[in-house]
Length: 297
Image 1 (cartoon, rainbow, N blue to C red):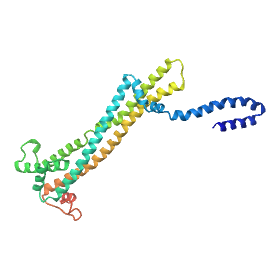
Image 2 (image 1 turned 30 degrees about the vertical axis):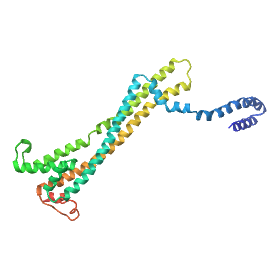
Image 3 (image 1 turned 60 degrees about the vertical axis):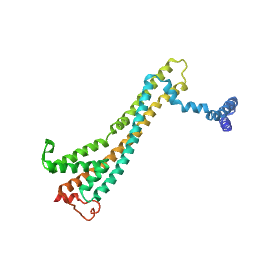
Image 4 (image 1 turned 90 degrees about the horizontal axis):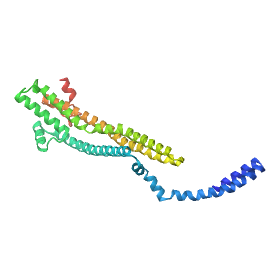
């Protein structure tokens, strides 16, 4: 590095002339020790553990030096992050468990020989997932209305109408249960960046205010506090991005699952209304009821 700078100055001096060469000679001699000292000090500064520790602890240093508003915003972002990650992990575990139980129940339902066998299975193992919950209420609604009739206003109408209302009610309940917690994730994903931005603005304001009150103003006195204030924006994005991605993933997963539940509700209603199996060759082994054939009947 030093040799390249020396050769460059010598070439410049030759091009400019002998007078300029004489004037640049002391400059080269004076600049050489400074460049050498800088080159010698740079690896030491890069390898200094204290300097690296100060850089890594910039966030904690900023939080400790901030006022009550800055500390409150940091705690608020931390709570939002903990809440969002708790909901993400809890809902992932719940969705995996529900889908595994739903697949098992559907296999047992369509493999059963009669509705009485399905009722016995539900009574034995319980309705632990939406498909079993829907089948249990629909079967009970049909039997209750056929036996007792319309005892209350909500049971008025035909048996098919009462079963339809019961199925719709169960689907609404399961939809609300699946969407539980998504509002929190959406709120965290939409507000966390603005909370971090507010913390950055507040920190920059106080940093510039303290700099304006000091006597000497250098780039180091400005870059340090402003860079630490920008940490709040990074924290806001770090909190918001996982929440937004998880929210989009859960919304799509719920939409697919509810579509399957709605299709099962149509097949179950057709089976309860007709009381017979309709086979079309393709779905004969998996589903005894063909929705299109039942509607056309």
